[in-house]
Length: 367
Image 1 (cartoon, one colour):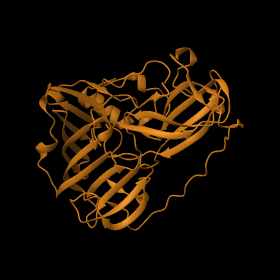
Image 2: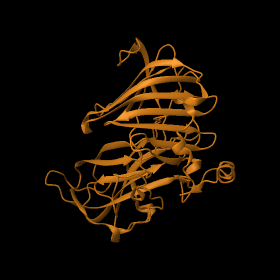
Image 3: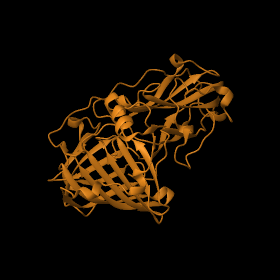
Image 4: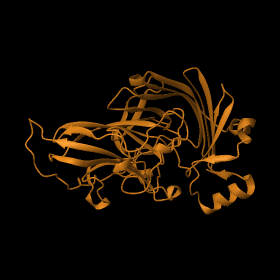
C-alpha cells in the first residue's frame, strides 16, 4: 500500500494530540515523538481537552506514517489510558493492543480507526495515548517506541453505571505456524492497483522485487502525479522521486526483509484458508492469512502477491501480471537528480557499519 511519504511515524487526530499536528507535508516532526510517556509533550502543550462519555464506545483515529516492521521481533501498536494531568508511565493501562503489519514498503502511511470502550470512570483530567512499539533495532534513538497523547475528560454517561477502570491486559494470542506459509519467488515484478474509497484515492504502478541484491523499486501514479521509489537495502538508502516536479527526497531504510506470508516467517499473520477463490481475477486460487484488520492473499501455487485488503473498510491493493526476474541493472538505477541529494531523512541511528558506509563512501548528512 503506497501513498506519498511523510517523515513522521505516528500522528493522532481523534482525539487531537498534544502540541502541533500536521500530516500534509513530508518531514512533519509533529509525528516523531519518542520520549515516554507522551513523546516529551506535557499537558501545557495541549490545545484542547476532548470531552467524552465514560463507558461508551469511541473510535480512536490515527496514522502510522512510516512502517518499521521488524521480522526478528515484530512490533505492536496499543491504546492506553491514565488519570491525571501528566500521569507517569506506570499509571497507563492498556485498553487495546494489536500487531504491526508488513506492507513491504518502509514509506507506507496507514490510517487506523480503532474502536475502544472508554473506561467507566469519571475524570476531569485524564489522558488517552497511542503508541507504536516497533522493536526495531534501527530505531534505537531515544527508544524504539513512538508516543502520542491526547488530553480528555470523561463525564458520567446517562446510560452507563460508573465502575472502576478494568486494567488487566488481555492474554496474548498464541501464534501458530502453518505448512502453507510461504515466501514469494526471489526475483519478480508485479503490477498493482491500490484503492481507498473513503478518501477517493487510487494509485497504480509496478513493483520490482529482487531478494538476491536486496533491492526494490516501486513506480506509481496517483492523482496525475508520477513517483519512483528506489530502495537499496545494502546501502540503506531510499530515493523518493516526484517525476512531475523533478524533485527527489533521500530516506534512510530499515533492514531488508523477505516478502513472505505467515508466522513461520515471523510475519504476524495467522493462516486462514488454502486454495480458495482469489478475491481478484488474476489468479484462480489463493491462500489467505490474516493479521487483525489486514487480509493477505498469495497465489496457490507460486506464492505471488495477489491482494492486501482491510476487513474494516473497502481499502484494497490488488496485484497482477507477475513475472519472474532477473532484471537489467538499469531498473534499480535512480534518476540522476536523486543522486545529487546530500541530506538523508529518517537516519537517526543506523547500524555502525551502515553509518560508516554512508559517511565515508557517500558523504551523506544525517537529518
